[in-house]
Length: 469
Image 1 (cartoon, rainbow, N blue to C red):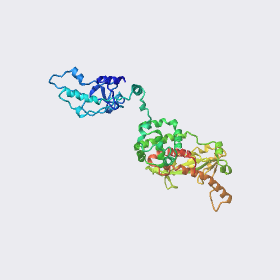
Image 2: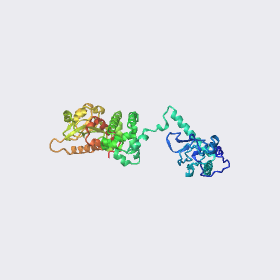
Image 3: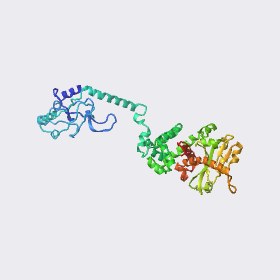
Image 4: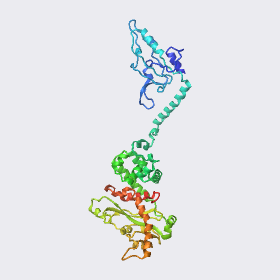
């Protein structure tokens, strides 16, 4: 209200009653009273804005008093700005006591006589605009919180800490450009299962198990601009769909090298971290989770064994090519030994060996016999003849009876059928493990050094599944 009085006094119309929508021409203000640069963010404004507390000060009578014109010299009002139609909005002005006006063509031309110049300003006075509806209390109420915000922002910018707007997570700053974001699949279980093999809740559970080593992934998050959840999303996607790096780079708005680095880092750390978990359950846990059919027919079963092979690209080295060639698959493969509990947990996996390695050699190089307790029974396929390796530990290996000649006795046939019926669960688990397509397709040469880690990660991910069916 006090500022309004100053304006009316400056224009020599103290009794003037302004109307809603009235304003004042910008030529009545000095250059230092107007700015077009934001005082808060230092960016160029689209329109000119009055400084807070600015009062009109350029009028013809002031010019006449300061510099009286000579008798024959016409009076010309000086303007600090070009005669452009500039609109100053109320909301952009630091002083909300006024709104803008536009000069008419008559006002843009100067005359030769002071009387005509005075009549020009009288016409401008008729369009004097001052917002009558804003009272002083409303002005103070609007300006005060803005001033506080400016002070707080400047304080943050000059403090040693990072500004608040820079403390947003890298995920918020970078992942918006990615075509795929795991958070977009919270309520799309079918689609997320297609890409990763899990729903969103299970995905978060897997991520939580890796929280102790999360610092290893934070550097990638900063360097590659891909959030940690999306790094896991990329890794599971490659395991599940065997997608090439070029396609993943396109999906996550990065390059081939970054995809390879992310996959290598995650597979290595996941394998090392999960290898610290003892997946070999005690005898008590085995009995507690053992299905009734096992309790009735094979109550002492500790583990069921079976071997599986994974095809690979033939190595260039002739020695390695020969060592990895499998006569059973007639291809270059890696072979691993898998062991499962009666309850359906994959409790044992060996290292990956060349396809020419026999089952006996794999067990011989493993620590599996020492893991078993005396009196345990191991169910195995008829091709896994390793009784001699477990005999010193008083562990029995139960396999189907080999047919030597003729037919087997009826009791033997019934026993073998029961054994095969209970062994079928390990084949289902191996099949579930190979739903991670990277194991069912050929491993490329660049992934061969990671083969053991990839297999162990896929085995652990299989244990995250709800069931083997």
